[in-house]
Image (cartoon, rainbow, N blue to C red):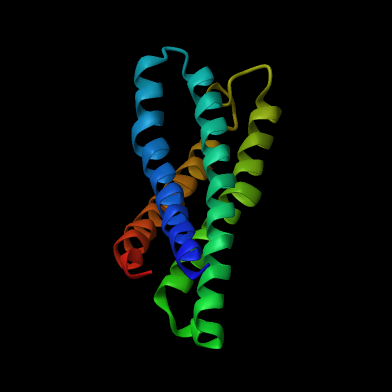
Length: 151
């Protein structure tokens, strides 16, 4: 059973961080390059990010429980635990804070595209904050992948 839990933890790290990198730094840029309708590309990218974030939350929660089961109370001194917890926190901030605010701006801009409305500056600011948070989460993912080889 212990080996299975370790293997699942390794798969969780792979799925979580791999989806962050594949969607954020491969699929979405290709989508915006290949799709001439930027509004449609943005909608599709948003759906991909949401799917990846749900996967990340599931993997992250598993990892937190895995780290706790392996170390008990000593887990609070483990960088991997805090890395996963930080990545989950960033995911929640993006999905429960920034994205709803961006969606609200899109709704307020209708029938215009938000980028062609009075809300474009605020939308760009939120998008920038979201992008920086995503980058930080991705970099934390690098640490998680490298250090989790010892799971």
